[in-house]
Image 1 (spheres, rainbow, N blue to C red):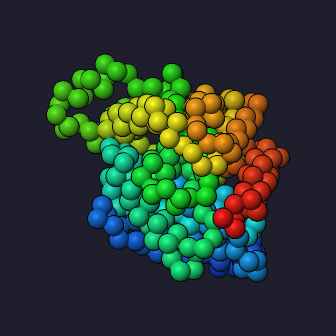
Image 2: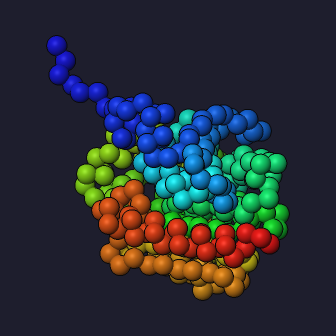
Length: 319
């Protein structure tokens, strides 16, 4: 007789989803959205008893998805009065695509953006302020979405430990990428790059690490060749185009982040053309500021995000 215990269906345990979301004061919906690049899985978190102040469109990090602990961010914003929408990026979670393959970040960003635009331009929300939010690799995807958008589409941007600069110890070997490149793309989807213990560099709280590791949809393989090649290209491209950022933004980063250098957030702050720009650095915090830090640290970060977005809605909401 097996003595193995089955993992709970959600990070909060066995409570039915509708019951859990209601206990948090939000309503959750799930659906699929068809795009020319494949079908993507989407979710929303809407406050139950609060007027909606604005919409927030969120993008998760590498190997993750919109469920499990990432949705703690989504639920938090919804409890503040925001309608939150998110999509599993191509190759992640319940969306189409080769698992954790990011060979064309422009396409990946455009795919999620097509869903976000459809909601942002809907009759229900077109009159409200709208923000893009990106965590880690999702920060890079969010920046590409902003570059791909028409002017005046977004009220502001929020970045949590965005991957704008790869730490030196995490950068893939140029020699290895060159040798794989000689294979004319045949090796692009191979999961054969060193993983460099990414999760250990991201999560400080050991109990939360266990919860994150239990996510049944989390990618556990080695990074793919094309993923690392593309992340090197995209981070350099974004750094070279920081001056194109003109709208309000908040970027938050831990100084002990081993997965995405906080120097990337500093460069954005220094080089963006935005008049209204905010950089917050948290001494000693790791990469996963909300999902992986002790509760007091996570609450501090969420508090700063709430203060920032509430102030921008009040300032720009009637424009």
